[in-house]
Length: 484
Image 1 (tube, rainbow, N blue to C red):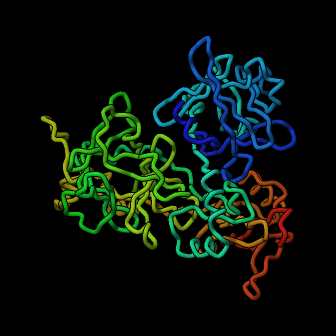
Image 2: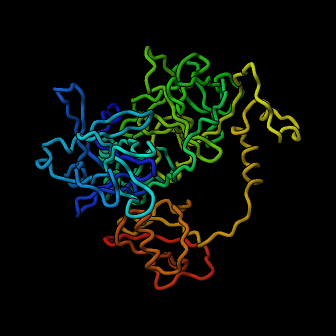
Image 3: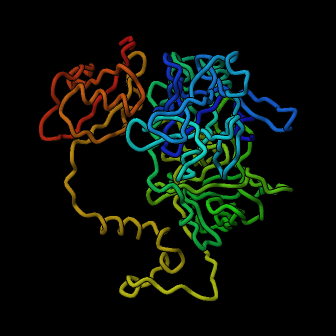
């Protein structure tokens, strides 16, 4: 239940890395990769059940209708039932009430009939559909990440700054979330560029680790300050303050605790880093009871790792100008230029030595010993991992072309143009087919695929066919109601 008490408005992300969204017209719900649209927002209403002494929630969509379970079978399924949107007066029988059940850092939502909310994958008609079910092969289908939307804080921020201030903050790439003044917080003009992880678990980075160092995107180490409370970044990785002792959480194989040299735990606090900002302070604490605020879920991202909190935020090493420089917070990066700030290199500096040493891999016999390999498992050796990925890569001809794309804001302006946007592989040549592909990928409807002229910088719609020979393209997606 704690996932739903901190934020009045949330977003739910399935194991498919897609968000639960409400369709505007037909009263249906589905999944979409575009978590920045308003349809991905759900207002939480908490209800206490007196007869059972537990809490349930209602989830209200942006159009005022509630997420509701039904007994109507979903097509071509044996046990799945439809999930729809209804008015509250039509749901007094409890079908719009959901009981959150924690499962590690995720939740399951159980309906009044005992079935669980499920985000489906596979081929049509199941792809992107949402049902309730009590019979499933993989438990992942009913697990959801809960992301809080700091709407109130954002509105307070905008009321205290002028447009010039917000533009300046955007230019210096500060870690705070800065968005277009013409839209509500979740509709940021361009959606988030967090890409789905192929291998979610990052526990292999901490395999047999007794102590580690964490190095941020800025090549600075996570440091425990001498006041035994603050956590910062610094260049001195040889300092004892950069050493974090790893504790494994009983009954969970995907969660760790990190203890500083002062014997205090790395803690995701609820204290705002700056008033009106979404980032929260990361501290050293010694809680009387070890709760989930000192627990971190490692999630692999290539050869680095993200550390996720119980509320879906990530440990972030900030850059930019003071007061953000060298600070550490936990937050969800909304701007493309700060996406890498939640990535950390893991250096294992001390390992647990078992009585029976495992046999050395065959490849080590032909390699000279090095400190990185002697101390750390191969999976956390940064240079080894990169070399191995190069050796294992075999040249294959890509079918189709890579298309990088951005989403224009309401005024047809493109934000974060200096960085690489989303991408997809497209095998066809027709513009109409490409438009449908983008609608399926983003969840946006009626989009216009445009290219930017190198001469005058204006956007022009694509017509008929794409360029030949599967050349890589960059396009801009413009919404039909755009003012530009």
